[in-house]
Amino acid sequence: MTPDYMTLSPPVAAALAKGHPIVALESTIITHGMPFPQNLETAQTVEAAVRAGGAEPATIAVLKGALHVGLRAGELEDLAQSPDAMKLSRADLAVAMATGATGATTVAATMIAAHRAGIRVFATGGIGGVHRGAETSFDISADLRELAETPVTVVAAGAKAILDIPKTLEVLETLGVPVIAHGQDGFPAFWSRESGLPAPLRMDSASRIAAAHLMREGLGLPGGQLVANPIPVAAEIPAHALAPLIAEAQAEAVARGITGKAVTPFLLSRIFELTEGRSLSANIALVLNNARLAAAIASAFSDR
Image (cartoon, rainbow, N blue to C red):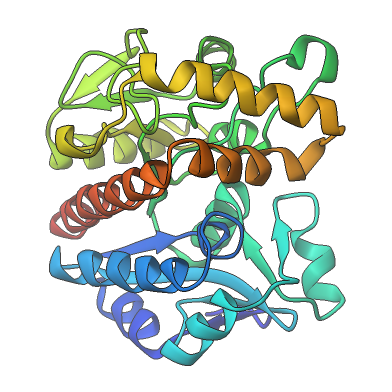
């Protein structure tokens, strides 16, 4: 039965009832990752890509205190134009719901909602991780702990390039999270296909990725899987070209005293400006690529 606090869209409810493939989608990319109207257009295009892959999209958000799994067209449009939507992770998801707030779900909160709804696969852009300078700031995303605790397979283009990727991989290893590169041996870095680091694991088949998830369930192991899916070649921005721009944006964030949840949106916005919009085009391309792979994995679950 659907919990009282959760609202399923009719297509998601029907897909769950029939055992059809479903892909969860986050909503912070809509409210905090892109400007309007690109955010709405991207959300609509990603949902269409999931449907084209044979799965039902379930964009997740909190609207006036209700946890929505699957958004109607009007709800998606309203969210895309909500300037005051909260950015919700594990720590504040329940508070937003209890107080009737509206908020967009991060990777961690989307995983929680997807699992509660019975959805095993989630497509996003890039996960959060260990921020640069975390040895003094202790700024580490809740996404990493969520991957270790919540049994959802997350398809992302690696960790966001603004992060300390070596430390992010170390934390994921410590937490026992399978990190699986799809189609290559190297771990991708969001806008770039290569981070310069090897991925711990590699799988090239959606069916095998689904099988590995089910095997973890069978073994009683907690947590999910991170599937690192590199951005398409034509859309990537090489890491060497991004490095000085990321460093410049990081320095600005420190100079302005920007901390906590405000860091990532600020850095993404500055890099958009510094790349003259190229980072946004790359972001859209990688999210679409992840949605297609997630749909294939979701279909593999249904086939099993």
